Image (tube, rainbow, N blue to C red; front, side, top):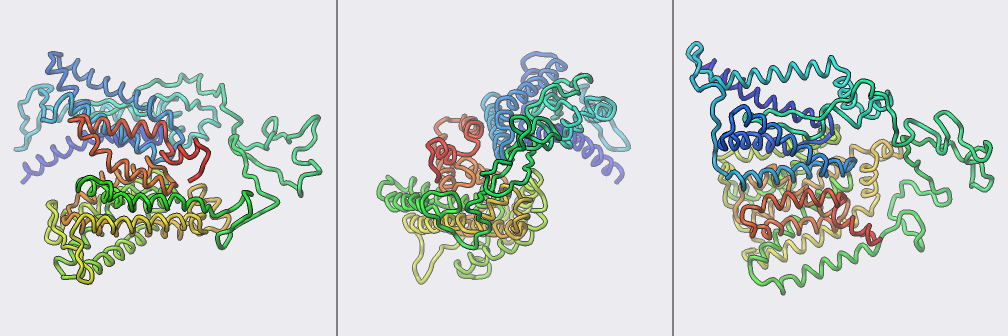
Length: 603
């Protein structure tokens, strides 16, 4: 019994130490750049594969390990400089998609260069096991534990006993406050996204530290701290031509209060002639005057969508393209709901495929095991999804930014694990069949039937989304995205609107999960896995956040793209990841908003 316990202990500590090294690198990246790096696992793999490659090429093991550390470090610096730095200040989800694209590129290139088989690395110092009270301890475990302990001690000393380390800690806690006390935050000893991979997956950052005398700020991008608009220096009242007070022109309508700007940003200007606050209903104004206005031309796009959906079956050459069009429409409806949450309300969700899985399995389990009618099962799945979303929304939405993203990711993983483990009901990892969908004696059993169903659902969803975002509810969502504090100041119930849009988006996903299950006729837990959630979020970002028609474009492109890339024979993962990165670097707002801004037209 003791020997078995020690064996589990040695194995667990060794594996835990390896993960600890990887987690240290992940933590350093996040604290240095505020970026969640979804390519961390690929850097671990890259370091191990390079170590094997260099050893097989005839290099001594120490030299191979050094090169396996340096090459991923260079790759990390290139990713940071070419992909992360150009879009600094972008939405959190945009940075996430860039790191996912980088992970796909690294994974694809590694598979093409080194193959997809398993590889082994020679032991560091022999492979003779060490016997301790009946348990076996390999010499490699001692190396892993020793390197982990050394890295922890070095990092503790650096962050607690050196000026550069303390400056980095201050920068990670509050970058603005660090700049105000004189820390040069543009150079840090731990450079963003610089990774080191080894055969066991160690991670570190490289770069150079500020010399202590460089901690004083020498240059500024602009005035720092609070200042009056137009003031010559902090604490001085602005004026014109010999001290005339700003804002005192007699022709200005009414008296103006002193306006305070923060960090060089322009203050908001009120419209003194046509003030409008919290309109209880949509408001029309004559002409093109500023203010809230229903954009009737937005429905022109809806008419185009309906026309395309009506004509598409006439031009599709075979059932393969009909199937692809149906999947595009299903994804478009899901992405519309997700865009209301991410794009308009500014709340990230990386576990949305879990709600899709609830709807799909409700339509599979309830008719199969309990004999429910498919339509009733679909409604029950949507109701259960809405209830679950309402229960978890309040605690989850107390978080913001990256923490919110991780919480929703965890929710999706929990749902996926539940679907996999409840094999007696869901069939486990193998999935289960779904009964055909019938209503009033009519059964949907052909691609054309399903096409018209999803086409109608898509048209209704676009119409509903356009009306929603032009309503007071939609304006409240956009206010949340802009500033939750300002929204509260003008009376918006922030928590209620967050919960409402999360529930609505989850119900969208659940209903389309049921449709997908009945259309395919079979459902597996892969429908609710993490990668499907990321795929849906990518559709939102590529098409354009806060854009109804951007949701349609993103769903169409990313549903068709894997089919188009199948001809690259092994390079499809590399090309797909590169496309994601390029789109996010040069089109951070998405295709539709970028093109609309370029040609001077709204949606």
